Amino acid sequence: MYSASVSETVDLLLRGARLPDRQSLADIAITGDRIVAVDPVARPAQQTLELGGRLVTPGLVEAHIHLDKALLTDRVTVSAGTLDEALRVTAQAKRTFTAEDITSRARQVLDLAVRAGTTAMRTYVEVDPIVGLMGMEAMLALRQEYAPALDLQLCAFAQEGIVKAPGTEGLLRRALTMGADLVGGCPYNDTDGVEHIRIVFGLATAFGVDADFHVDFADEPEHLHVREIAAQTVRAGWQGRVSVGHLTELGIPSSKEQVSLQLQFALPFANVVVILLGIPFAYRSLQKGNVQSIAYACGATFLYWGTVSVFQSYGEQGFFPAWVSAWTPNFIFGIMAVWLLQRTTKI
Ligand SMILES: [Zn+2]
Image (cartoon, rainbow, N blue to C red; front, side, top):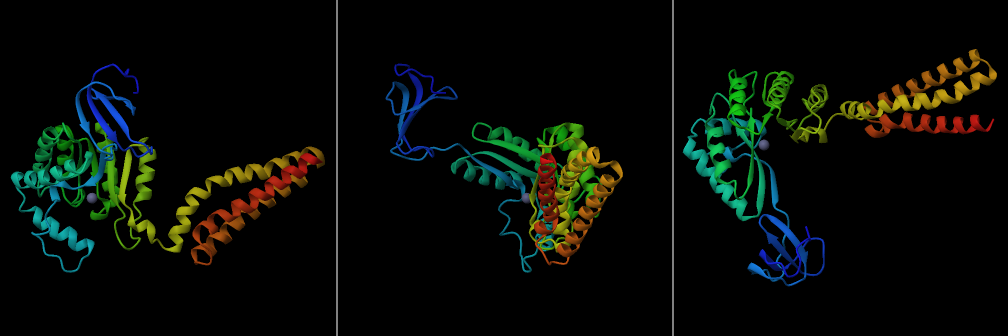
């Protein structure tokens, strides 16, 4: 970057570009597939485009789209407006899909996206006993066709469940063998969400690909599968390779669930607090004898866990916000430990 000399002829010069991070207009010099200079300096170029102050930004990224189910609104009738209805009518519409139909609708969306500046896209491709691998075959061809303009990532996706739709696991495996970039699941739409998640992780680790879940997509906190996904991510060592979408249930869990979620993060700090509390007592035991200090240390630890339990109980009943309920004991005893430490070191 910024390495081209002023006299060097570049392939393309974008003159008068507006950039997000600077006030004045700049010229962008490009050679091959690289930006070689960004400055207001005139230089020779094979081709020059006068932008007249138009904005130049990195390409846009569409991180979540369903090209195979796009542009269906004129084929389905919706009355209740619920998630269940959306799943049902879409599954019905899916039974009429053909490869040409999927390709034609997906192409319309891809053209719109490229025209709007999208250069990268992750699409979920439904793989199940209803459509088989029809969508995957269509999308693999489109991924190649649109490669000059857009990086299209294909997620082999179990929208209709895996446990309740026998044969889906084998189809997902075949989709990954055919060239799907990653694998995705939808545990809320299965009879055994945990097993569904386990199968998706099994495929992700077997093929060495990322995993992506549609999860906890409801108006009631019925599932909170995100916890199981987090646990299995750690178990598989797949940190940084798993994404989740929707998560609307996180906005409305009960007080009990909220406290429990907060405690998942707050309780590991208990170790720090207990160790901090232990240091002054250990120091004291050197000076004043063991028995009394051990009694104090045990008392402080019991008091800490007692406080955690009281705050948890009040938080679950809605007397405090969840974060207050989960973090206050750490806060109080943390301050107490620091105070004791200071006092002990002054003795
Ligand atoms: Zn989706």
